[in-house]
Image (tube, rainbow, N blue to C red; front, side, top):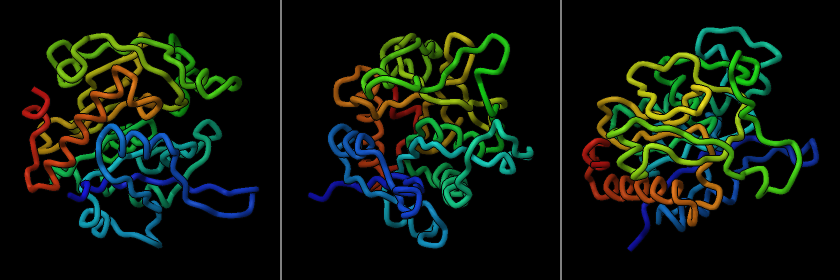
Length: 259
């Protein structure tokens, strides 16, 4: 029996500063294939090559990946500054309408890091350009040195709402996560529920209120060691269940599926 298809949103990169590519981390494909149990399909997130309509018909669910470029602040009514970093306007043009369409249809997606921020912006929210510059906030960025294991190591607690969606999924109100991001949610978008926060109050886990499908998104990177991590595994397992339900013609409401 064919596995349901998860479209993995790719990022634009230059190899050797001159060869343009669309790329996706192997750990994303690993988590989708071996934990969620779905077929990973890398998507060139550029409206020159794909349309949102084609993606909705081709894929059963979507993994909104992390990436170095940030959502352009024009998408939430602000001017770009040096603190906002790099941008990928082509990805913005695909992912933001894709999120809105998935929410409306009940088609499942899982947002990670930049993908988490895309969900918020797509629904009218705003972002801080640099969390570490805010009074009382931690430095959430990836350590500049060390091995991958050291960079993706668990670094802080995320506290989720007791009795909430993530609490039911993880079986705990506090979980340990990695942290590799510079930006973060300033104002939540319409229907965006902040269901988990870091010790400094930074939003870390969200979902879309009253959405007909799976809309969980996290600011950390659960794709790292997803098969073995006690937080990542149930997240990707639940995502895979939602994707299979969609492929079988059953869009399962988030609150029902997570109960």
